[in-house]
Length: 250
Image (cartoon, rainbow, N blue to C red):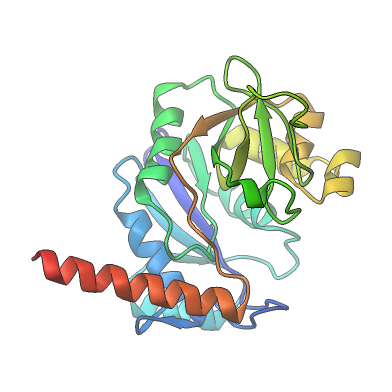
């Protein structure tokens, strides 16, 4: 591929404590990973979409629906490490990290990240955020982010930030799509986990602690991921209702 292209990378582990075999769980008759892949194929600014896995079953499923897949080592500690391992052999200018467990991901959200990287070649890293629901503000499973006046991340936290002593400050939930300049991705993966990263269990804090600026773009909403059987059932219902609506409009 050309050296100035942007690759959409989808890390996909077969093993999952709460939902074993998650990438291959069926949604509306198709593997979960296929839904993610197909939506990413709709992103015009990506020159390539590829699944990265350490499991032959996932690779076979991707090949079965005609997708692109690369094998990576089983000992990659995170999705970022998995992508960085593969990116050493790529000539891409930038990479977008797309979560492999978000079958309802909006292609427009991925496009916002990829397009920003294309239009701002000096940008090191970019991610997304969406307005947060009141009931999610104190939920530690919903990551919050605060930005400076130029739209760069000041901090990410599982705590409710900023503390609402007075009204007026924006309250945003982080949306876990990341875009990296290729050299930024490789440098980030080479760094040791940082103290704040360990405390909050948030990998993006490693970037901030090491002086890597993260541009935070705002989108209207975030789509739910799949981590549990209950999440899978909810995604199934949403997908089927969406398919029914599309058929009624044609």
